[in-house]
Amino acid sequence: MSRLIGYARVSTGEQTTASQTDALRAAGCSDLFTEHASGADRERPELARAIAATREGDVLVVTRLDRLARSVQHLLEVIEQLQARGAGFRSLGDPIDTSTPQGVFTLQILGAVAELERQLIAARTRAGLKAAISRGARPGNPGVRERLPEAIAKITKARAARHLDQLLATVDDWLPTVRQMRPQHDWATVVAKLNEGGGSWRTERLLRAVKLLVAEHLAEPALLGRAPRKSANRRARDAALAMRRASPTITLQEIGRQLQAMAIPSARGHLTWSASMVAQLLKPTALDAVKH
Image (cartoon, rainbow, N blue to C red; front, side, top):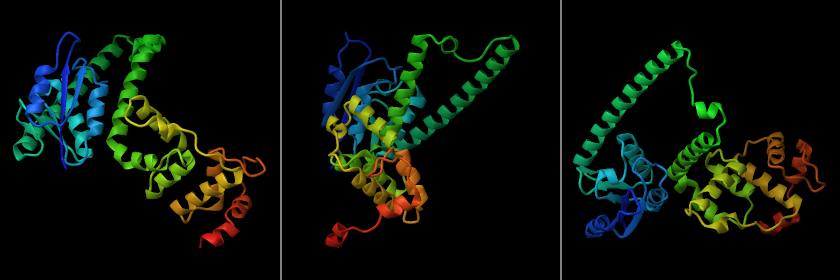
């Protein structure tokens, strides 16, 4: 069953979201997310949680567009994230409702305006940069060039926010599998399962993604729990079998390289895997015969 999910925002702690939440409840919103943050600040955890809470058929609702975004580009980015999740968007005080033809038409106009705005900004930036260089100026962020901690921290924070946005756009494709398998299975086995459909996950990348979602309270801390210990040989065999299931044409040499990249040792503690070692690892066992 589809839901209406409300999002309310005010800029300062002295302001209240009461009038917005009253309007959102009157419109039928079953879940409400409220936030005290500047409209120019894209690092809004409650907005991220509101988007993550949407499922296919749901609609994110705000009282006015300026409660969600201060720029057309940011508005379109949020709507794109919602559409990727099969959800819609509605503003009670503006003619935007992505479930209606009129709302889609308005959105298309806003998209054209945003594209024109990006082109104009890019042209002005190129012209300004060319003029600055002709005057002997050095392009780039002076604070970053001088390794100022506050400048580096700001850049790092912006990159983390973009990374979170990218994760939220695809989270429904991979997080259910992680929730199903963790922590009963180790990360290498989870990665092999995710890559069966043609994915390109690596253990370190998946672990960083889950840690970020847990830090933002968008995933359960239990996912990061320790997997049951396996013998070295069993862990290697499980990983090798998972690779072969994901890619039946994979060579023994490639399996060996991936086992080495995953730092999985052999039963004798070797981290370098030859093709013959992998072949021995994949030989059927008595346990396999019982299973079949």
